[in-house]
Length: 368
Image: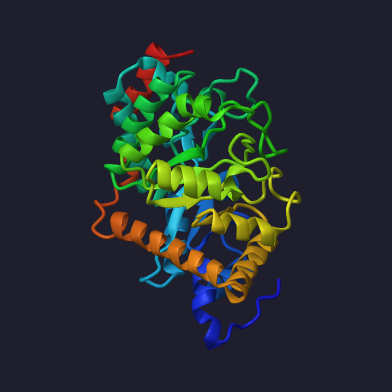
């Protein structure tokens, strides 16, 4: 890895580029290349996966160390995918949650709100600030290989009800929620980790099925929305949602009035990677009003993305303006959730009797 020095004249661009990245790490502790990059780029956040996790105490200490590496005025947002069901990075002693479909099947929004709060408390106890949950997709395609029981329901109305309640519960604990994957990954028949899915639906159908849960999320005050690496030809014939101003700026920001942080799904995913040059991905996504980019695995991609985001600002005032807007929204997120946050729960809350009882109710009343 070759990280070149940045002159004073580009210091602000360097800082903004780093702040727009949430990065993955290789193992259960930092290696020297990762430390070097963090010192140089000061990334906006980190995301941990199973490869980074030994036990609860190690996760909490790792998150503490990551925070210590950044200046106090730029605290990183420490992230995790802790949905429940198939997507739960931290297992026991944390509560092992059933799929959110089972939670939705219970049919009680107050119960769903309690589940969101419990998940939020456990994430904060582990040192995380943001949980990439809930899935706001409607499970409307039985051939979908990636969503399925991660969704609350196959009904748009039921999904919307539970998405809103879950977000209120989670964010009420001080844990940042993220509605994903806008404008909907539920009707795909392919996996965006492996290829570019296409959803052939007309706008009225999208309005009736895909969009109501995201509107419910926005109405509930959701702080972040994650994009879908999915093509919707009726909205944009050429570019997937992550790269589409029509979908993100026009639909999410203007029509649905979302003023929070838009985060891309992982840049590693083959729906994007290798299909367009990285510079085009980042430039078009920035124009579409993506604020922050996820780069979850390879450090080489992280470095390339950082350097590209710097260069784009140097070459195009519109890109610099987009970066300024993105970082402004990222700072506003910090102000909202990190300043005056509730006390961090002790690790003893993981898998406590109250949370086990909540999980058991879904298994008894909601098992599909």
